[in-house]
Length: 128
Image 1: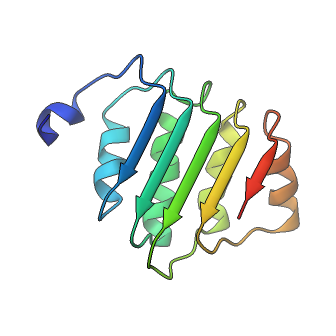
Image 2: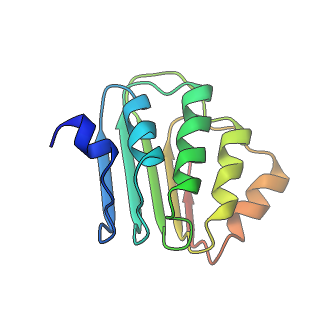
């Protein structure tokens, strides 16, 4: 499927979404223009992820109708030295069904935010 059709697609029955891409901006665009009302698992593998890209990605994820169903988020930054800022991670508080979060990249959390993330829905595992 070409990018023009992908951007306007509605994936109502999709439960798992995995991206292994060079830039996260394409993923953000897909998330902004699609609906994933049954999405349960999201994984992103990317070489580098800036603070700004992380903020845009998690914001788009929180707005794509997956908030009520998303149970697992995994973000893998292969080679970059970017960090996920606490402001980007705050978007995860809008996922009541979130059970597992895995971040394979540096991330900065304060104790208050970590406590809140542990109490989103019934989060059972956090890997940082």
